[in-house]
Length: 150
Image (cartoon, rainbow, N blue to C red; front, top):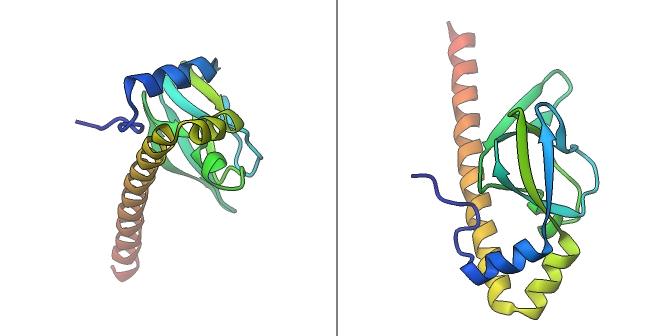
C-alpha cells in the first residue's frame, strides 16, 4: 500500500494546513507548476493525478506520477523557490490545495512540533522519489546499453 506523502502530520496539523489552503482546480494538460518559474506555494493533490515532467533539449521526460495525497512544489518551501520540473494535470479534473510557503514557514516557527513533522514527512517523500528516479535511470541506462551492445 502506498504511503501518504505527509504521513507524519497529525489530525491537528491537517486542520492547520486546511485553514491556510486554497482549493484550486486544473484541467487535463494544464500546468500546476511551470519548470524554471518561481513559486510561492506547495500543492497537495486532493483528487486526480499529475505528471512531473522535466523538459530537455530533445524531449520531455516524465519523472513521476503524483496521485491523491502527494505533494509538489516542496522545493519552494525547502529551497530557493525555483521549480526544477513542471507539474501537469494528468486527469480531466485535478484538485489541489495550494498553501503559501510564507504561511507554512510561519506555522513551522510558531509550532515546532508541526515543523518537525512536516520536515520529516517531506524528507521521506523526497527520499522515496529519489529512489524511484534512480531506479528509472538505471533501467534507462541498462536499456541503452543493451541496444548499443546488440
